[in-house]
Figure 1 (tube, rainbow, N blue to C red):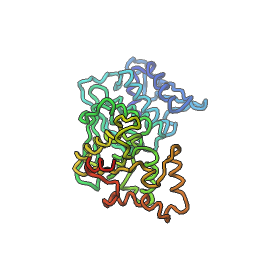
Figure 2 (cartoon, one colour):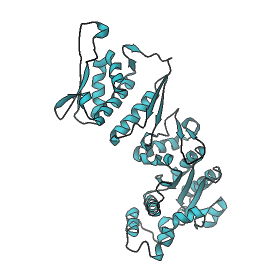
Figure 3 (cartoon, rainbow, N blue to C red):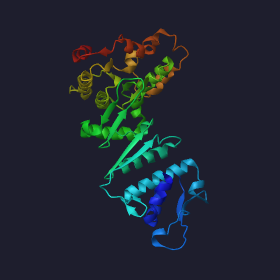
Length: 360
C-alpha cells in the first residue's frame, strides 16, 4: 500500500510534501521529509520515475523511507493519507479518481505494532478517508482506540466465536441527544479505553475511579479477565448512554451506581435521582440483558461503612492491598460483590423503580 501511495503523490508532490512533514512531526518530533526524483529521458508524464523516493531525516541523519523502521513507515503512510484527504487531492498516478467511482479500502488490524500516538493518527486518517465522497473503509480491529461512537455514517459490527449471531451498531440510528454526543466525544478523548466493552461478552458500567479500581481488582482475583471488563463512565450521567449502546448490540452489562437522595440539602429535587430513574427505565428496554445495582448510600458506605471526603480511590487501594483483605470478615461483601451480582443475591440488585424508591 505504501508504494501505491507514493505513486499517487506524483502529481502534487511539492504541495503535499510539507503537509506530510507537518503530520509526521506530530508523531516523530524533528523529522523532515524530502522527495528525490529519479529523472530519465524527460517526458512530463514520466518525470517521476520508479527510482524516485522519499527521504526522512531524523536525528540529523537522512535515509530513504524504505530503510526506516516499521513504525516510521506506518506513521508516514497515515500522515500521507491525512495530507491527501485534507487537501482534497487523493489521486492515482496523475489522474484524479472521480467521485462517482465507488472505492472500498479493506484494512486488517492497523494497530498492530504501533505506538499509541500512531494508532490515533491512523484512526484520524481512516475516518478522514471514509468521509470523502465515494469512499468506504472496512476495518477490523482489536483496539478500542479505533472506535468512535460520535462519527456519523459509521457501522460497528461485533463478531464473536462464542456467541450466537452478529451484532451491529449504527451511529446514525443511535438517536443520541446533543449532550450525549458531547459526553461521548469527551470520553473518547479523555479515556478511549471506555470502548473496550466491544471486545467482551460482559461489562460492568461504573460511575468513577473508585468503583473501577474495585471491580477490576475483583475480576482479576476471580480469574474473569476474559469474560468481564469494567467501563469507567466518568459519572452517573453517562451510564444511560452506554445502556443505549448495549441495547443496540444486544450486549450484557451490569450498571452499578450510588443511590443518592431524592432531594438536595436545600430541598430542591436532586438531578442524580432522575438519572437513577433513567438508568432503570433504559435497563427495562434490554429484556434483562442489563442488570442494575445500587449502593446505598454510596460505594464506600455500602461496603466499608466509611464516608471519605477526598482521595477515595487511594483510600480503597489501601483496603484492597491490606494484609487481611482476603480473610477479614469486614471485606466479605466487597470480595464477593461480583459473584453475588452474578448469582442474584447481591443486596443492591433491583428490578423496578418501586424497589429503588423503597431504598430512599
